[in-house]
Amino acid sequence: MEMHERNSHDRLDTHRLVAMGGPVMVGGASPEERCAVERLLARRSSPLGSARRTCTSLARATAVDEALALVSGDGFISAEDVFAVHGTAVVSLPGGGVVSVSDTALVTRRWSDPIRPGGQPPWLLVTVAAESASAAAVSAAVALLCGEQGPAWLDLNGLAGSFLNADGVILENSCWGREVERPDGACVSI
Image 1 (cartoon, rainbow, N blue to C red):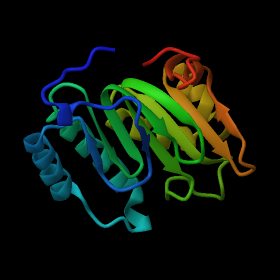
Image 2: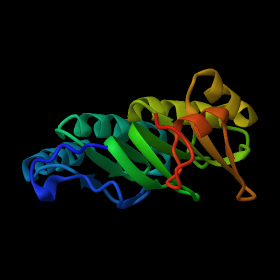
Image 3: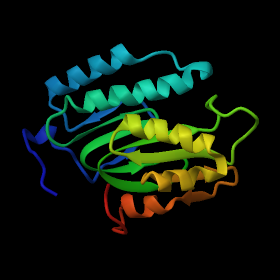
């Protein structure tokens, strides 16, 4: 992959493992871009009380989409359950697994999000890959609402999804295998 090199400190390191689920991380941005991204994300941040998690997950995804647009060339933004990249990055997923993604976004939703009444759904975590973080956030929520039909719904819509059940078993829908690359070289990128 060719990198858009501005300065050596601005170059996106595609060999560095980025972990989803942690604090905000910005990679590949110039110092000016990093400041602009951090200001935008700070303006958009809000308390994450459980009653507001559904709303804030989409708001955070939208903010990440807007923030990534501020980064010229290859770069990434990771903010809690949302990850987006221009270029290629290796990402450690919540619940297990490592993937390499190119020019895509990943969002992970947890079953504790107050989006499905009536008990625990079959999935503890759903991670969706899409062209934007906003699309991934909405699709992950819908996949949780669909319960056991979540993987089929994502396949029907051409979206890649990884599902973690209560027994710790990871199920990947058909699109996941076609759209997300394993760092050991097993697939194509989105």
